Image (cartoon, rainbow, N blue to C red; front, top):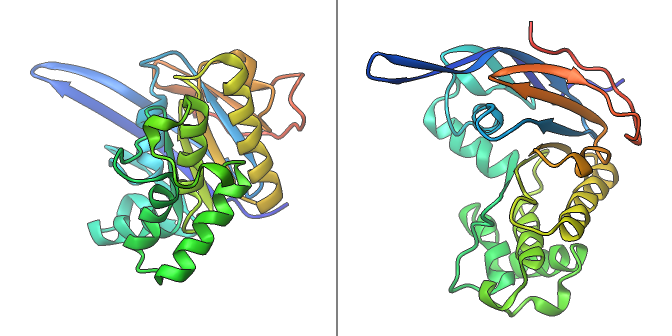
Length: 241
């Protein structure tokens, strides 16, 4: 069995508003390996987004540690976090996050611009990625000219631009109809299994859970492993301790 790409140990996050405290994460621990699609299931406000933000280096926990690709994310300085988000982690958000004035190909190219990839190489990879997600004919179109499912495909292509090892998707199908949402989840699963990526996908849609290799359930900040008999593969996970 391969070494874990992601190791989460004892994560705790507390938000404070005056005298009131809200514990968003309670001693969360689990591991994720290359080639694994993990669904993190829970209702809105359960802690899914907070957990993904800690793993991707967008926020810091109050206690615990996160290791991604051998780097202790929770100990990295700000420039280290920027490099991690640029080179190791790709993000896909529910709101797509595309730049309206840029074409699909230009949106995909943004992370490569930040990484100073030469223009010819950048353009070639953008075309390759759009073809990979089935949008080679939409390369010149702007986001407003695309359907919701097509915009999310562009967002996935953009997330893959710098060849990340970890894909983090926060409710990527939340704005899509059920059929399109399933297509997007199937696309992520295919990319994970073909390219050996690790993907963490937050969702509350039970119809998408069956596509995951591992399912983790989060409720009021506590994470527990759960299984689905319909899942194509079964793996074990270490839940909250």
